[in-house]
Image (tube, rainbow, N blue to C red; front, side, top):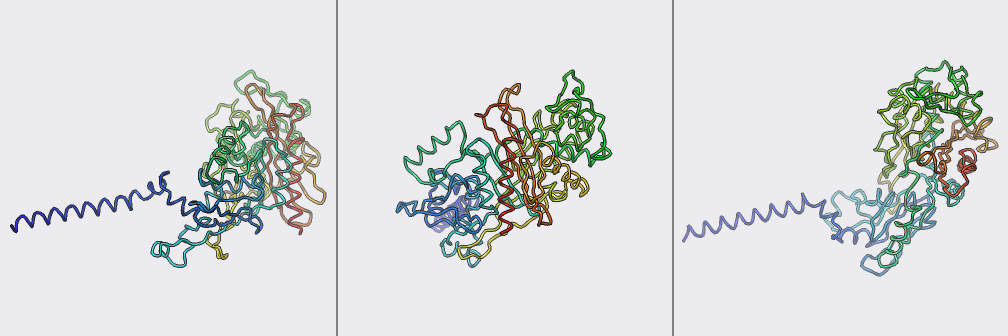
Amino acid sequence: MTTYIRHASAFCLLLLVALLLNAARVQVFQAGSLDDNAANRRTALARFGQPRGDILVQGEPVTGSRDTGESLRYERTYKNGPLYSPVTGYASQTYGTTFVESAEDAVLSGTDPMLAPLPFWNEISRSQEPGGRAETTVVAAAQRAAYAGLGGKKGAVAAIEPSTGRILALVSTPSYDPRSIAGTGPAATRAWSRLTADPDQPMLNRAIRQTYPPGSTFKVVTAAAALEKEVVDGPGTRTDTPSPYTLPGTTTRLRNESSSDACENASLEYALRVSCNTVFADLGVRVGLAGMVRMAEKFGFNDDGIRIPMTAAASTFDTGMNKAQLALSSIGQYDTAATPLQMAMVAAAVANGGTLMAPHLVERTTSADGATVSATGSRTYKQVMSPYTATELQRMMVDVVERGTGTNARISGATVGGKTGTAQNGVRNEGVPYAWFLSYARSDTASAPQVAVAVVVEDAAANRSDVSGGGSAAPIARSVMKAVLDSADR
């Protein structure tokens, strides 16, 4: 009898150990996958069971919460939703979260352990803290200026404070109101279906998630590489470049929009002022593939890890090209592609004396009562070029605005530097070109540039002859820069 009891006890012990191991497997090793399972409503109930913390622009909330009385009790609301959707993203009871709503979800929903008064307090008490807040770096006047300037055209604007990397404006149009998909039920489903089926892609954040051929704005990168590698004796020295220029290894002749005679053997500063394709194609080849790749990557190209805090799409500069392809890439064509954020980073690096600060959109997160949970702070992304090169590029970009293709960006009482771009679009350049403008500005009373901007306008409805960086994009950049300068003076 004792033997049978001993065997039964051992078997029960084995079952108990198996039960404990299985519980550990489920609760520890499978916890993440179970939390993320679409059928698990606990996450949604926690996220929407209390008012969600707000996203702030200059201390004012651009979000809110509405009590629905349903099981998912609090529904997200948005103030000026289309204006700020590229910043906030959406927090939907049906479709999840994006952008700042996603990147700072733990703080906004009150589930971040850093919100608790003591370590492991929420786990022990099984309580949830009130939703915290996310304070953005956006300047409201600059955001409004960018949105109004685009006027519903397909396009985007990114503006950065060069000395800190703070993103001052982030706009994408056409836009949408995230409130329309915030809840559950047929209305949200219909809105989602309409938005996702819209050929204009209003939910696409063109400022950080869409890449375009940067066209002639990329010539700033090529100019930096040429100066750093000393393939020219200086900005004012003739470059010994023919016009037209035959692409290496081919019979294809590259021409200029401006007078061919004027661009022949033009100096670097003159070539940037009137945007000579031939000069910059030749300089890119003379710098060489390795040198051009190195300079592009210092500016942020080919980096798929740029987070602001949401991840930006990687801008690309091909690392394996022949000389003809390199020539075209050096004028922002072939398969070179950039987000507006990336080109704003180019302008910011020049404006900041060659030091590129990491761009960021959230200044800090706080608890509901204002205690800091996390702070981003400014940090150097890369030392892109020498201060000498940056100073020369600043001078040349000012020349573009004062006497070249960027005169529409002039601001009274401020120094403005810029570069226009008109990038080819479509097979055999059949589409309407993309109009680009990148720039920076410093008021006459400031000691350093205060804003760097990149604008791209797709504008598929425009007449082809009417589209140019100087004509379509520069006035938008001007209005954004002026809004920032005016805000700084208050």
